[in-house]
Image 1 (tube, rainbow, N blue to C red):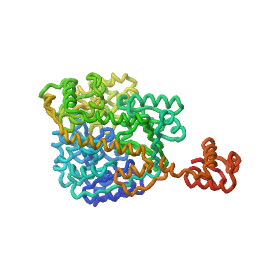
Image 2: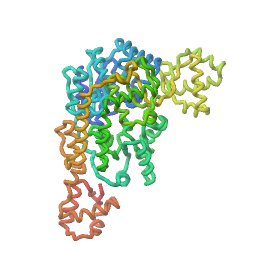
Image 3: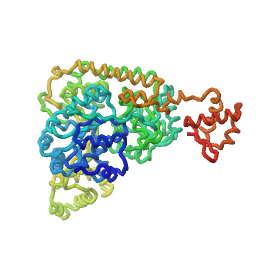
Image 4: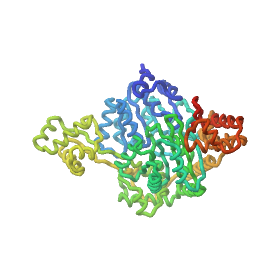
Length: 633
């Protein structure tokens, strides 16, 4: 019998009740019914597979497209005392084999897997011996070629289903149109699937769009008026640095984040922001996915996203604690023209794709006839610089090459150094006599980290150098010496994207791709951009526009977006008085009724005075306390 799901939720997460639709999804999984679940950003998708997996025997295999997201989920589960591991590109053979052995022996409850690893020989060898009872597909829209974030490697999941025909599948996404939903069901071969959709309404999140000539000044004004934690999204790395500096000069504590920073620095900045040591994170869209921070009060976009899916995902990182929060998009007409230009770059011609393939082979010095499966560290910026190539064109060409099964570029992700102790206790004790300097390092490692004899454990050479007061490079050399002695395996830190050769290297002229599918994707991208423009220009409720885009017809006017607020402007009779009340309270934040009334400069009888106060209070602009204090909201 499965364990009680409410007890699991309380014991591991500390919640007394499930959120909207979570329990319905969990019960479907426990009935072993294939399910497609659409929950809005911040709706708690991970709980929907984690709770039912804990309620029954066996392993939950989780397919996730982002290495950083997998690592974050594994870390969160371990902090709750739940066994979880991840396998992804960049791990050594020994690390992979050890992880798979633990899964076979059911020493792990959750095994996270990047889709690229599904067809590897090692995984296929171990798969039949694993007791997998649930297959969870995170970010399931990635499997659809008609989605905004298509990942060709996700197509491998269909092959995995053939190996696990009786294992129920839970596909999860926060952003899938009806076309993409249908494609997900077909591509995953879901059997009589249950489709469960949560409401896309975010009652406490206020959406606003402003055409602004001085976007930086408007950003500072927003952050000065609205307190709390914030994310500011920019399209380029350069702009994240410049805006961060501008905000600091304006007295607003800010830092910046992008994939080009060293891993240690990215982690440190993210941690500072998570701990509220930095109030504002200025970032490219590389930041925020899977980050468990509920108290973000504002998300500001300084550039226009190319589709509502991306905008909704990023804006939805505000107000996950369901407190009042703001999602603001600042734009200029030039931004829209640039998006149209970029859209053309996203669909390169066959000649361009063949040229990119040829340059990749030269850049990585891959000989003709080289076998599939080879992996290389890859520096995209250096590649583009060396071949004088536009970054967008290069990435989109590589996306096509991946779709057609030629090669793939996996995300840049921080892979910390790891250690697995392979020696017996007696061999470790002998080090004390023969190598005292190494013995001190070895003992420090054994005291500082758990599980070293069972699986590769992430370590920090920087931490060890501080504890032992030795140079970091010396620590690395000593770890290499311990590995040479056969006492442990040591994998150095990696922080570069991984280029994978998916098929034998061939002549660039032999590269082909499905042009009809390419044209259809281009047409859909044009339609998505048109919808984004409609969102910007429309006078309708912003929340309703987003909800209907995702086929949520239950959503009603939010009452708090810029368009809804515009419709609720004060009647002409009370507006002059309301304007003076706003002006006074925006400065002082609160005043006594009597002093507020005394400061009114326009003609105002008692009837107009009380009508104005009533209107402002009913529309959420002020509150009046029992002791006669008027507060600005």
